[in-house]
Image (cartoon, rainbow, N blue to C red; front, side):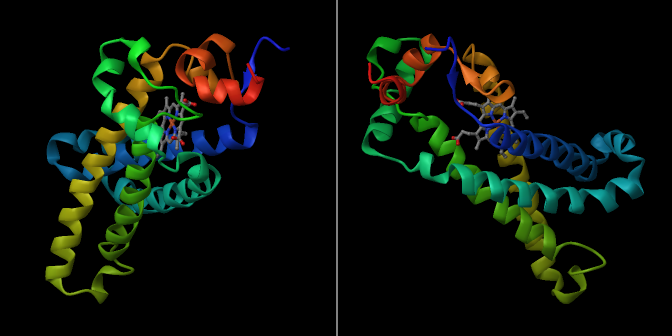
Length: 205
Ligand code: HEM
């Protein structure tokens, strides 16, 4: 048997990194528009005018590549009873009491909850973003709708940024995970330790 276990195909990894890069760009260009204290970030996009022009297009691109990612991954993220059990033991996971954790399949309860959180947040960002997009769509809506949409867009964007900070922190914290999304493989020890039921399925051990 090879030393490494296959976890992601090249297509899945490219799709993931297209989402990750466009998310970072959407977040930076959006934060620049959120408050004057962050306006300096607009220099990354060629100044205020270009930042304002590019941000909605980056957002639409993010939504499109995320829809592809969600279509690839949703089946593996369906929440099962053992994931609820995992959520109940989250305190043990955070305190490194791994021996108390229930076995997990390809993804644990936390990863699945994060997946469905992002599945809910991206369409809200896309929809509210389209409503407030001047000069194309905004003139079609009354002012009160624009005000509510801009508020929801900002709140949901911050929630999404927090969710992705948790995702990136977990990816870096669990040693050996980043390799899954760069090379597409993980070590047998990683699989056995973090996703034992998935390891069993693959190896029959
Ligand atoms: C910005 C830096 C990012 C890093 C370093 C990163 C890292 C990773 C890593 C290492 C994995 C593999 C975890 C595993 O197989 O157990 C992963 C999976 C995944 N990532 Fe990211 N990621 C980033 C951004 C994003 C963003 C912005 C999104 C979505 C908006 C995202 C969505 C996903 C999804 C859906 C999975 C598969 C896990 C699942 O389906 O539950 N990632 N990421």
